[in-house]
Image 1: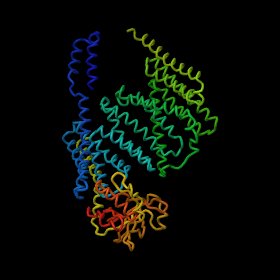
Image 2 (image 1 turned 90 degrees about the vertical axis):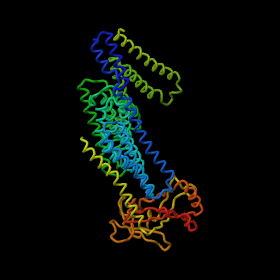
Image 3 (image 1 turned 120 degrees about the vertical axis):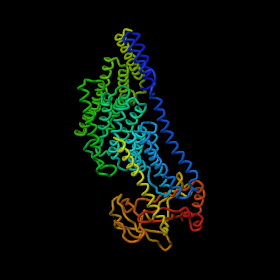
Length: 446
Length: 180
């Protein structure tokens, strides 16, 4: 339990005892149980972070020191120095596994040294033998080689670093025009580790970082790895992906709820709304669909199949979560699911009937869908007294109005219209606040 | 997962991490043990600002745009090929034959890859120079103009650059082969 939560619990015990909800004996037992910060999660996390940073800095520092005298060293000495980061990293890992397996600090530090050690060794050998190599191949090799290590040592820092290296590789490969479809098997290889981390350490300080990095890596990875053989497929993939994130935040799959799933809720909803607003414009809808099929950008035939596989996976994930959410009658993020469904419908319609009438219907449909999703969220927010949801809904409507009526040609010349719209938007925000406050006062007489 | 299995997995991971690096080391050292030194003209770097970071960037025309071989034009990009080397009258190396399987004889040959359209992918593009040598190399590049070359030792497909030289006058001063 983190220190802040422990202190909150102790305060609550006193409050509940004073209100007569907890008898004195139970209150004393609970206080005795939680009064001493036995294994302060905050301190051990700090130790782990310091250990990981310290280990990485030592490796880098030794490399810098060696680099200063590099030209004066004979080749055998250079080769020995090149091998030291790699060998010492794995030696440390073996020692940690056999003797310090219970210490998170040792496990995290060993993993970091292993991962950086391999990259350092490969880079130094390239320099000694003048091998050009590429950052792309080094990143890919580092990621693949480090995968078993972070499983064996159950390292969270290693998991974070792996995600970063994998995403960097994808960016470099895409820039060089090479296929990036193996991003998905490499990401998939990390999934058991990620699921284990979320289920067994939901309140660890690293979990929010892991959540956000995971979301960022996937968002970048989707965009980079799609071969774009069928134009516009990215809309479907992103729609299903963000809707899946949003619905995942309401899932009980990870066992714990609340804060640890918040990144998924925020990223899912935000991503879906940004995507929807983009799709209210014309430019994404030109020349999309299977009628405009084209060869893969990288030239690798199999890479095109990966687009369909990724789409199928995200559609299935989204559909299964949507079904379970409806069955549980948990409608908080159903507006997000509805938006994703409309995007899919618009794409299929325009791909099938590629004409101006359908295009106009798609534009109207997207705008209406955002409005409906916002109103749904607003109603849900009012019903459950959620100020965040209500304000978000109002903000969505205001953005929609702004995009359709303010940021258009000729708007700035019509000052009266500008003034009226700004007043209207301001009234909408204030009204939402007043209504919510009244409702909350009715519910809570205190 | 019990501790023994984890130790085994870690051992296998160590072997996988060590193997490619060892392979590079062994192949390169075998090439460096060969007595024959090959000279290749280099081109394409700016003598006034030749360094990106701490290395010289260049191209080797003899290895990237060899004489017209029919087999090269038929190869798709990324296909492995074996370039047999010979020396011309002035002592500079060139590709005398391109094969699709490893040569059986004792000729020196390099393992390269086709870039498509009759070209070969650049394989030797850098010479790492320490900061203290960089300024000296820079001025010599300016003096020698385009008469620049690299030295290489070759063994069964692996080539290792062992030195860099500039112009006939500056050759003796800047042959860095003593490092190898």
